[in-house]
Image 1: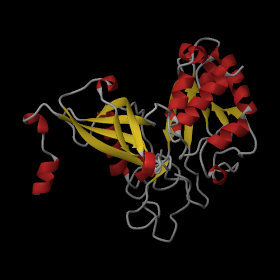
Image 2 (image 1 turned 30 degrees about the horizontal axis):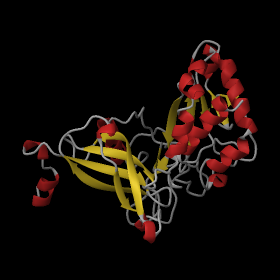
Image 3 (image 1 turned 180 degrees about the horizontal axis):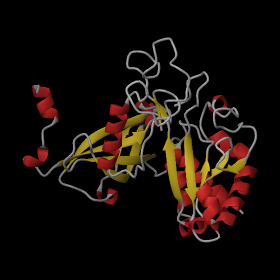
Image 4 (image 1 turned 180 degrees about the vertical axis):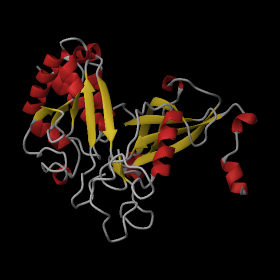
Length: 319
């Protein structure tokens, strides 16, 4: 093992009670991730124990140089799977010194929706199926594809096994374990329809695009008789279809074509077990008369704060 690797793996808890907290936030593009670390005197168990921090927003495209300070508000903490020990990852959102959310802070608006009494009462649950495509290191081309060429047609890759069908499984498995170590509620993984694709925007060609199907239910939907409320919620979603499509990610017109298990983005539809519809209801939900539904419209590059907040607003807040 190299000297550098030994230092990387060093356990600081053997010699100090101090910990490293990696503050993480969303940058100026709305999709880039920024972070910086600070030393804390000891372990923490709640984001409320953490100090606010600041950074130079002019260097991230989030503030002018003449008034560049942006304030980080710690909102959630997770175990650090990289440094391990008592070290933590700190998810933050961003505010002006006056306490106003900056434009790229989409969490604040979602939190306002989720704090409404009618939403709190319904205890909404979400399950996000984040699809993504692994790219080769040296070229911007999917992992497992011949450079400049294409693999065999889709069919054997979905939930596939074997070195010729499930490229990148070691990376995906490492990511899976890191999420569980961190304390993130991740329900599972699977290979997707396109080789190199696992559960940002689609590779062009005769392939399923990458989305972020969003499963949703409320306390009332999960209770006996909830199927009626599910259908009422779907009807509300249909009335705001254009607004949702506009907020569900960029490049969706290349994915929501009516082909490859998608509905055309210009029309709204729903169905039981129908993966070609905008909203899919599972067979078990229909059979049990309660449960959840799946919004299949969000793109893989969607903002989860925008999408989850919007679904709650449309189905619970709006009458």
